[in-house]
Image (cartoon, rainbow, N blue to C red; front, side, top):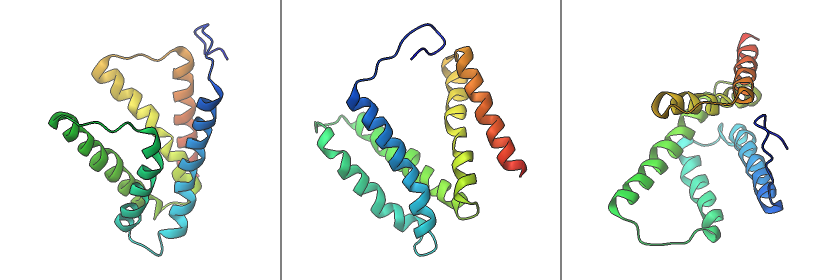
Length: 145
């Protein structure tokens, strides 16, 4: 498939499979979130959900000793970027329908690209800007309803 720059991207079948599986399991967070939020506190949900998810990745990880710097980065990513982000997301999910929350969550890559531009001067292709604009439009339309 062409991506606007004239280049072709070829994805091996396992990569395609795991990409689709990733999207499917991510979508389950919305469904199970709405199902279990009324019954359990958010920290309790993730106390169980995140380690179970990590166990599912264990067969694909090569365990090796970590330097203190790498271990600190790993702990920060786990606590702040994963646990903290999901706590904040589920706080919003308590107040919004799952469909609206999922549309608002699509802002994540747009915001990530904004930070990549500000900190690393990374620039999108014209097609990337079009996609970011469509995401922003979808979020605006969702919020206006």
